[in-house]
Figure 1 (tube, rainbow, N blue to C red):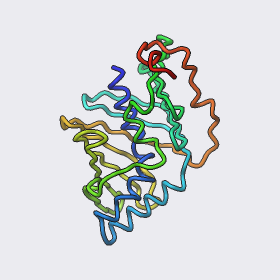
Figure 2 (cartoon, helix red, strand yellow):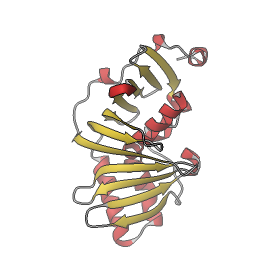
Figure 3 (tube, helix red, strand yellow):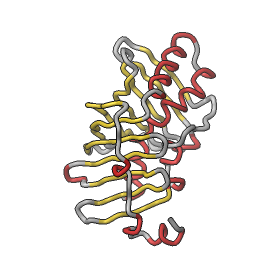
Figure 4 (cartoon, rainbow, N blue to C red):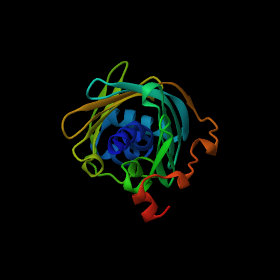
Length: 216
């Protein structure tokens, strides 16, 4: 269960972290012409937006639907408040990832470096020139397909942007089994002041011995 949550969170966090760094470092090597110009504009736009808040809807591979609010402050900090029956909060304070089950009033903590989020919330991401698989430009959508085996095994990430303003609208993760998890974001506010308390976690409340033994 915890591994699944972390995997979904990594997928949710992915576009914000990679758009500024991954696209900037690898796009020009694989993409040329007008496609390269489109990717460069997307990268420049995300670099200019270090903080965000908004709402998200996540569609799982089995047809399950969850959603809630998200808060992002690069580098290293992110928070997802799942609403409804999920009753979860998943967040990173820059060093650790915490999962709070609000119904059970429990916390589980993990080192950020031990989770997929470590690659997603860093200042920069080292990628190969093969990361960008394709770019598709349409009148109402720019789609960038990325694949990096060092992060998600054989996972494929498809990012969808509004070409009129380069805002991210949706992304889909296809895992090594060919299963898709899609996330749509809306009511997004950019470059907002986010208080540090959004990302604060009291790690003394940890209930997982592995975290306690490895130190905080």
